[in-house]
Length: 142
Image (tube, rainbow, N blue to C red; front, side):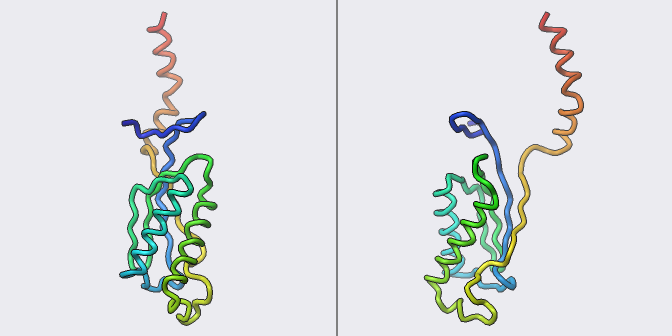
């Protein structure tokens, strides 16, 4: 099985490691709340045609390794995931709205995202020596 996925006019491998936290980094992602966040992320990711590779919900943050189609922007993905899971959590656990300073915001602003792919040094070497390799191959083609 190839690590690449296909759409009608593109083959792609776009994976991201994303981390985000609840507001004030409260340690509320435990028990049923954590399970609800976990299942919400799975559901909403699938609806956006993204594939969750790894998901880990810690008491004060979420780690997500996800494969995202190239037509999907990360900011739109995170807006959907954070917004929809917040609505879902507040509906299931209304007592969370009563936390001090909480208001209608479950997640803190922002997130951390990093691309996952080939080793950067390997890519650098490939780009640097690509012309040299192509010239060597041309010699053998004749």
